[in-house]
Amino acid sequence: MIDGEAVCPRCGSTAARKGGRDRKGVQVHRCRDCGRRFTALTATPFSGYRFPPEVIALAVRWYVRYRLSYADVAELLAERGVHVNPSSVYAWVREFATLYEDAARQFRTGVGSAWSVDETYVKVAGAWAYVYRAIDEQGQIVDVYVSTQRAAKDAASFFRRAIEATGVAPTAVTTDCAAAYPPALAAVLPGAAHETGKRVQQRIERDHQHLKGRLRPMRGFKTLAGARVLCRAHAFLRNLRGRFYDFGRAVDIAASSSASPVARGWDALTADLLGR
Ligand SMILES: [Zn+2]
Image (cartoon, rainbow, N blue to C red; front, side, top):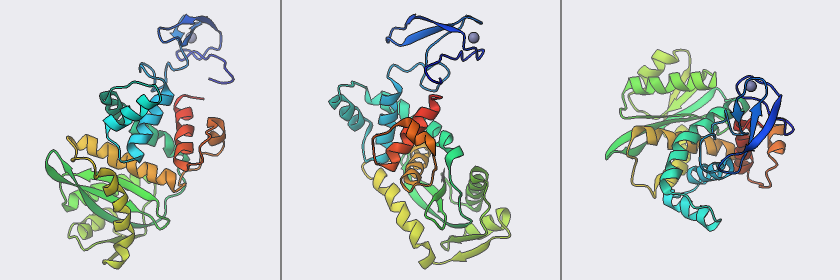
């Protein structure tokens, strides 16, 4: 919606008239050209939710960023007079964490070509799963992949996905001495220089600690999908914090009063998802 003008999400017409309010008190418009009834949220990912985008956005950001449970987030919202079930916070995180990351992709600044790759562990349904993570020479987290196995094909999957997601094929890769990496690199990145050793791995191992910290109050994940959502979203917020995204004017448009790069970036993305 531009300058308060209502644009029909079905036909793109700007010939709409106001048509009362819906049950939540939100202004409804009716398109004069195709008859579609719509609100400012129709055709946005926030359509159909009982709570406004601002509440959903805040809940998801808090959950991913801080060491909180779904119930903690519900309690913090209740302090602000917003009464939400923890199960709603869970549903929002599952739906929106990935949407925000996808929306942010266009604003990502360049990923470097020297990657440091390592895996850490999380409990999923009582068993260990492996979280493959890579950071570049600037400290930007390149990509994250959760797998139940730690074979060469899993490491290869990680590299393929990371290259596809970033559009960057690294020219240098450092790993620990795990046996899975040499065959994975030979298959996916035969031209890349490969260095191993404890010293070169300190950076990525330190970076794992941030994820470990977020996961510490949790007793593991129930599903692999849940592990993937949070491990990826956590990395995404780390990158927001590290200012590896350039939102340009979008940050001003979002008019965030917060000085935190995470909150500012998040607000800019909320505005982007709302089509503002
Ligand atoms: Zn229309």
